[in-house]
Amino acid sequence: PGFAAIIPAAGSGTRLGKGPKAAVTVGGRSLLAWAVSALAPHVSEVVVALPAGLELPADVPAGVRTILGGATRQESVRRLLQSVDAEYVLIHDAARPFLSGETVRAMQAAVRRTDAATVALPVADSLVLGGGTPSGQQTTVQQPSTSNHPPSFWVQGVPRENIWAIQTPQGFRRELLLQAHARAEAEGFAATDDAGLVARLEHAVELVEGDARLFKVTRAGDLALAEAVAAQWGQ
Ligand code: CTP
Ligand code: MG
Image (cartoon, rainbow, N blue to C red; front, side, top):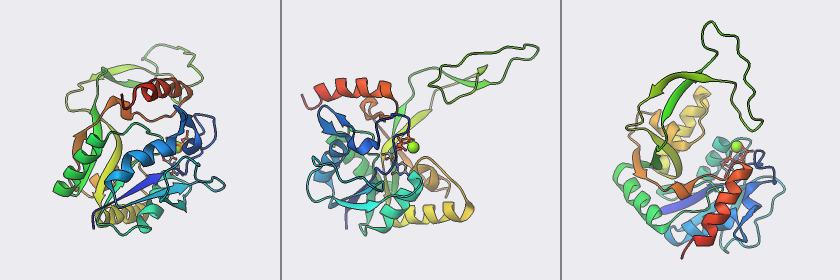
C-alpha cells in the first residue's frame, strides 16, 4: 500500500549539453541525489529509470532501485510503472532538484482525495498567442540560436487568469495511470507529462500550487539559477 516514487532520469540532456542530467551537479550534489533525497522520506520505495551506460551517481542515497529507461520520457515512465506495485505513485523529474517536503505532503493528500494530481504554478508573465508574419509585410527576423521557435509575431493576448504551468511531482493511483498510458500507446498519443494522459481519459486532475524553485534544469542558463537556489536551500 501507500506511495512509490518513480523518477524518470533516462534522458540525454541534449539542451543542457553536459551529458545525462541525472549526474550533473548543483551545489556539489548530483541532480538525481537532490530528487531522491526529497522523496525518499515520504515513500516506501524509490525507483529510477537511467539511460544505457549511466551508473547511479555515487551520492544517491542507498536503497534506490534502477531500471533501464526508454527512448522517450513517456516510455521511461511506462517501464517504471510496471516495475512497482504500490497503490499510488509519485512521478518526479530528476531534472527538478528543489522539491520541499511540504509540497510532497500536499501532493500525497491530493492524490488520496482525487486519484490524480499535479503540482502547477500560476503563470506570472503576460501571455500571448504568437504566429507568422503580419499580413502585407515581408519581414525576416533573426532568432537567437537558443530558441526552438520560428520567428513569430504577436497575434492575440491570452488572459492568464486560471492559466497554470505544469511541473512535477505528479501523483496518481497507479492503476489509473497504467490505464492512461495503455490508452495513449494504443492511440499513438504522446504527451510531455503524465497528467496530460490522465486528463485525456476525462478523469479529474487536481492542481496543487507549486513553487518557482521547482523549475526544470533544461538549458545552460538554468544552472546558474540552480546554483543560487542550492546555496540557500535548507537555510
Ligand atoms: N527522461 C527519461 N527518458 C527519456 C527522456 C527523458 O526518463 N527518454 C527524463 C529526463 O531524464 C528528465 C525528465 O524526463 O528527468 C524531463 O526531461 P527533459 O528535461 O527533457 O530531459 P532530457 O530529455 O534529458 O533533456 P533534453 O530534452 O534536453 O535532451
Ligand atoms: Mg527531453
